[in-house]
Structures are given as structure tokens and as C-alpha cells.
Image 1 (cartoon, rainbow, N blue to C red):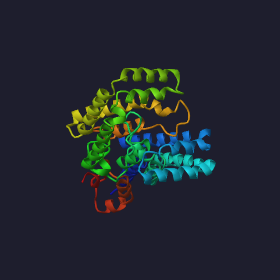
Image 2 (image 1 turned 180 degrees about the vertical axis):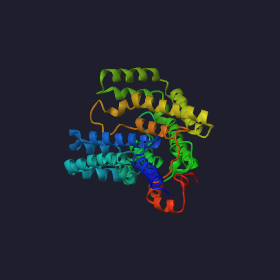
Image 3 (image 1 turned 60 degrees about the vertical axis):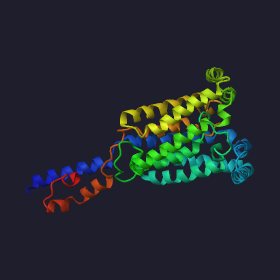
Length: 344
């Protein structure tokens, strides 16, 4: 081998190593970054002055009543701790959420941050949200059931950066496998369909009262949206709940259909999530002040996008390319051609 040939081969390996060092974001990475942004926003909201007062502990305490005793007592215990140390506990909560968002955004700490977010989300869902009210009979897909915080844990699992990834036509199927990921989708959207038919929603004025009450404290344009939607639903709670349940059930099973129909289900899921976020959740009440998170709408959108058929193309593990670059000398000695191993 001439010096010129060796120089060309070295340049090829260097180019591949450099490409591996800077890997452009794929669909999964963009969704991870979306999750990171929401975590950071939650941390910023937690730094609001009202959160450093007893108002925060009182807000949490309201999620306990109506739950089984073990849940209600756990929520009350957590609220008492926060009430006695509002400044310290809230600063810790806000900092943790900021750290989770920044950790997910930084590739080097991605796995650690996602794992920590699962633990934190489950703890807050139990102790801070009372399991999102799913055991109280008052849960509704319109106002954010099953609780926004548990969706952070679901997304952390669906967007886990598994090395290489399993073959799947959508992002969420890569860490779990397509079958397990679709089972998660079925449970999530199927439970929302179930919640839509609870008595609190199907009562004649159930949805009307729920949406109408959201207008208080909101900007004029959003309050008008609430009042308009509430007017349309007046005395129509049962038929509206039935229609919503049917739509949610169609979304739940639609992901099992061929790709064109699955895409329709994903688009419908995004549309329902955005509509409920605007009308039923009032953008997480962020504009009214006092919100601790953005509620479930944006998170459900991320979940839906993670199931878009054709949105995932498993890549060669980053470490494989770097390992090949490091072993280029051994490949040359054996007469290997650059890129030959990568195609096997």
C-alpha cells in the first residue's frame, strides 16, 4: 500500500468518525427535545412566587379527597411537609424539573435524566396528583386525566434511546418493540375513552359546568372560547360524552390498522389533544397564573407523534462506528475495505 492510499483510507475513517461525533437529530431525538422543553417550562412555572407560599401545599391537598385511604393519606402527608417548608421544598421541586429537562436535552445525560424522570413522575403522580383522580370517579379526558405527570413517565419509556433499536415503523416501537408500544397506546387511549363515559362527564350539565368553570381568571379571548364551548354542550352531556368516547376508542384501536389508517388515528389523536388542551385545559391555565405544568395536551401530542408510521429508521449504533474507526488499523492489516463491516 502506498503512502497515498494510506492517507486516503485514513481520511475516510476520520470522516466517518467525525460524522458519528455529530449525529443530526432524528425523529426520536426531536421528540426527546420536545419533552425536554416541557420539563424546563414546568420548572420555570414552579419558580412562580405563589409556589413558594402555602398556596402550593393547599393546591396539592385538594387532589387527595375521594381517593382510597392509602392514596388520600399519602397526599395529605406530602402536603403537610410542603406546608411546613414551602420555600425549600418548592425550590427543590423546581430545580429537579429544570435539571430533568436540561439532562434530557444533553445527549451525555439523556439516559440518566429519562430514568430519573420516570421515578420523579410516578412519585409526583401519586403524592402530588392523587393518581390524577382516576380512582375518584371524577376523571375526564377533557380536563387532563389521567394526570399530566404520568405521561412524562410514559414518554420517557417510549423515547428511551435503546442502542440500535428494534425494527419498527414508528419511533415508540424502537425501545419496546412494536407490539408492546401499541399495547401502551391501547391502554392510554382506551382508558381515556372509559373516562369519557364516567357519570361526571355524561351528566346533562357535566361537560358544560366543567368547561364553563375554566373561564375564571383567563384572558378574554380564552374565556370566550370556554363560554362558547360550554354553551354548545349545555344539556348535551350524554351525547357529547358518547361521541368523545367513540372517537377515543377509534384512536385506541386505529394504531393496529395498516399504515394509512394508523396515520389517520395519529392525526385524530393530535387534533383531540390540542382541542382538549385549548377548551378543557385552557392551555394548562398558564395564562391565568398559578399553573405548575402545561397539563396533558402537549404531552399527548408528543405521544401521538411517537407513533407516526414511517417516522423511525433505526440507525447503526453510534459506538459501532466509533469502534470501527478506532480499529481501522486492524482492518487495514486484514485487508478490509472501509464500510465493509457496516454493511453486514
